[in-house]
Image 1 (cartoon, rainbow, N blue to C red):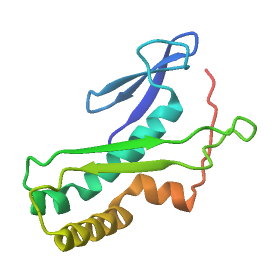
Image 2: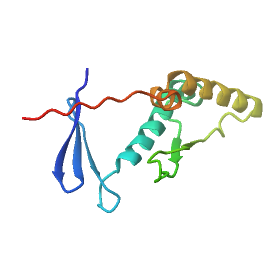
Image 3: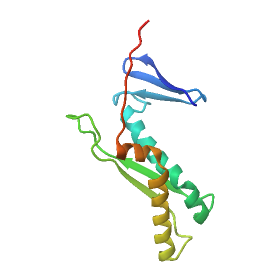
Image 4: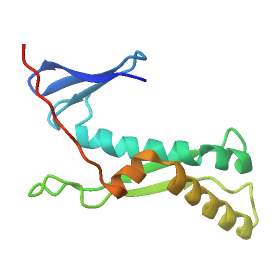
Length: 136
């Protein structure tokens, strides 16, 4: 299992790490060159949607199909939540031609996302989070 952790590098600045060697810069909105934790949540959702639909779309559009998943949603600062996240999957389906084929593809892609996107499924279902604080 991949280990994940963040390490503080400065005031409201962290580096996210994985045991597979990946890193990501994290910080507050006023820091250049970093993602906020909320932005990472949104990116995780968009990436999950893209990856969950990838095989289905590649099968019908070819391995080199173009796709962009945009995600947005404002935080409610009173409750410190994102009450609504909106995704838009942008696809070039011009090669399909047939509107019925496009409609079928979109239904199958949406089903694949609903079935396989762990991040989206977790956000929709809600999850329990526990925090343990260890001291030296």
